[in-house]
Length: 437
Image: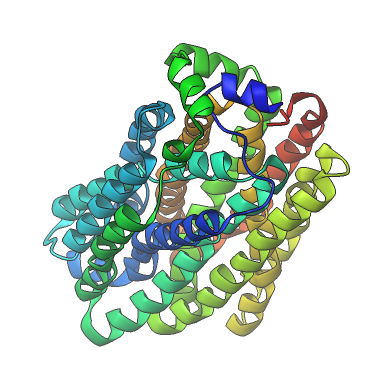
């Protein structure tokens, strides 16, 4: 896309080099996303003590970890993204408000006295978090050159494994010392201070455009919801990526919750031991995989656009048998070691997938495109993954007893071949569908 064409669509072309202001924005957004996943995923390590304290079943536990959060997150994501895509919207203020809401509701979760109260508090967390990532992806795409987009979005995506790592460590240790309620309040309240940092330090790129760019943006007719949807779903590559990312999330969120329960139930670890062990897997390996996925996508995608998704596709195929062996072994130390490589390979998709999505549509539809991806990942992934894993675990208990979670995880390992296939199919379409701006 030329500079003139970019201006006609209401944006300024991203700089080829990353400015100090953009680097500051990326670091702040990373910290925000760390809090996003810390507040979202801490329930995983606290699942067993919450279950014991409130007398919940595995199905109720899966409902709290999944649908209670994901349904409202997914449903609100698209209208909030439409608002973020409007030229007059200040995306920085939107992210700051969202952060304040989900942080406050995370703390409120610690006050819940029964299943219903905790259910509504988790819904509140989902409502707040719906305003973060679509606006963040749109900010990044407006500020970073297309050839650096996968790496920049992957850098933001490091919030997933880092936030999950901190949630496991903080949740496990604080729970053992002071209980699960204090753990939830401890991670929720600092987000209110971070919301002020976002509001007063970050800058909205739309406000720093040249007079020519601002005039072009003001004259641009915004896409209607129907027009945005038609453009997005006209891309076959987008549809394949959406399917692959949604199944990846379904398996990832399901395994994220129940692998911890698996180590506690089948291997006899405490919440602290399980949290620290899984922090190594989900945290360190996830960080390496997310970072590596973005770097390789930019490097090899510059030679051939198909290779933007090569590493996620082949990596997930390789991860399946190794993951199965990790769940099969009886030694928990070997199990943790075997989960490292699959976790790294399964995390590599984030930057390439979301980077492609931002390049498959025009700028006025970027936040909506990201929100549709998040809709699939959260409604199917977070909404159904932990919940259906819990339902299956309950159903298998008469046959497998305490090992029912292990049996569910056996199947989850091999289902990783499904997103591998769809990422490969999407890669074949990138040469013809990816835009240059």
